Every structure is written in structure tokens, then in C-alpha cells.
Length: 352
Image (tube, rainbow, N blue to C red):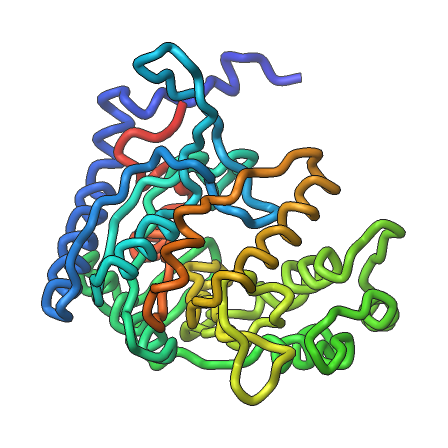
């Protein structure tokens, strides 16, 4: 057994020697952020700064918030949460009349820590009112190019994978990707109205040699196939836009006009890493409430808890204009632009 002397603990991030090693990457982070701010301004975006303390952290089943208490002047306590995304606040601003807005927002997600995950991280989120979600795909290509130019790197890298940020991203539907990389006919596991068929998915998974547990939902199986078979093949050589998610996996997106089984949702991948999540935004408040309730039912089933709905958000959604929006993991983008192996390496003062 190796002694502690043979395997010393790493120095804390604030030790002078380690900081000196990290500092070039952190300065590159600043340059990337400045470049993106300049691009957003040139595109006519107004930068906004939503507060992190909210009534609800978000209502997706598998996202977990940090809870706290707000003590009023009367001494009464009220449960509040740190947001997992500035989405609800930014959509309220769209309802208020803003048309193009962007935010570099600190967000918090519990139960997440690893090379690509920090409990607190920076999200770049932006919205285009009155524009199709394809406009966000063009934005993604511009963002990758700007990040590479600002960090002075010819390629994006994560571990042994690379991606040319100057090449036009490949656009592929989720169904096409499942056929190509997992051998699964995904659309055959959905009813004509988009309702998932668990039995059909289980049979397809088993035929593809993928594990199926007795308590797996259709969504659980989709996630397993995506992680094990599809994602490792995305964003290699050039970025990938994984488009047209099943409607059951797009609680905040509107359905496509040509196929009710899928929705206007895409994710941006580079070097096998998911960087951004874009939507043609749902503006039907009643439908959004219904979807949130289903998500919270699933959270209660799996994790034994549920989050409140932000009634103010649902009220604002009723007057929000048609819009497209996207959330990008800014720290991950910096990781790929600098070749850093861990997200903590690109955060100025990471979570202890």
C-alpha cells in the first residue's frame, strides 16, 4: 500500500504554485467571455442579470436545486431555491417586452460533481423573440469560432477527442442518431401523438444489447442509450447539433409542425461533450403547467420530493411572444477551448 508521502494530496487551488499554473487558462476564460459579450452586443442583445434566489429552482424531474429559507421582516420563514437556470426570469423579461436578451448567470445544481460538473457554474443563456430556433444553431457556430479565436487554439479538445471549431456543425435528428449509433428505431417506440411506448423501447434496447431494468421508464432507457451509444460519437472532428428531440423529452419546447412526436429542441456537442440546449420555446401556459406537473410527479416517484410551480412565470408565459432560447455551459466551452481536463480548472475560485 502506498504511503501518504508517496501520494500527497493536491495543493489547494489558492496555493501560489497551483494558481500560477491555472492562471493562463483563467485569463483565456476572460478573453472568451469578453469576445462573446462583444458578439452579443453587436447582434443587438441586451445583457441582463437575473437574481439567483427564486420561488422554484426549475421543474425538470432530474434537475436538483439547493434549498434555503428567506426570513421576512416579520421573522417568518419562506422556502426559496437557488435557480438551476435563469430561464424563468428571462422569459418574464420577454413577456415584459424585451426582444433579444442574454445573461452570464451563476446557476446551482445539486447532486452534480465531476470532471464536467460543478455544483455552481456559469451558464450563458440567450433568447431571440420572434425568431426560429434555427437562428440559435447559427449562433452556436459563431460561439465556437469566437471561443477558439479568443483562446488562440486551432482545435477544441477534451481528453483524446478534438473538434474543428471553424467547420460547419453537423445537424442530425435524435432519431437518425439512434439508428446510426445504437441500431434503435426511436420513432417506432412513440405513438402517433408522441406518447412513449415502454414495451417497444425495452424490446429495442434488448435487441441492441443494452441493459433494461424492471423499473426503467421509457425515458430512463432513452437516457442510457444516449449516454452509452450516441453521445460518444457526437462532435468528433466537427460540432454536432442533435436536433428534434422526442416531445416527451422536451418539457419546455413546442412540438414541430410536421411531426407531433418530436419537438423543437436541440443540443450542441463538441468532443463528445454536451455544451448547449436550445429550444423553440413553448408559450402555451396551460400546456406548460400540465408538463410541469408530469415532471414533478416523476420527481416525486424517483426522488421523493417535488418543487413548487412558479405561478408568476406561468402568468407571464401567457403573454410571452414566440421566441427561441438557448443555455450554454460557459465553463465547459472554456474547458474545450483551453484543453483543460476538469471544470474546476477553468473556474477562478471553484467550489470547495
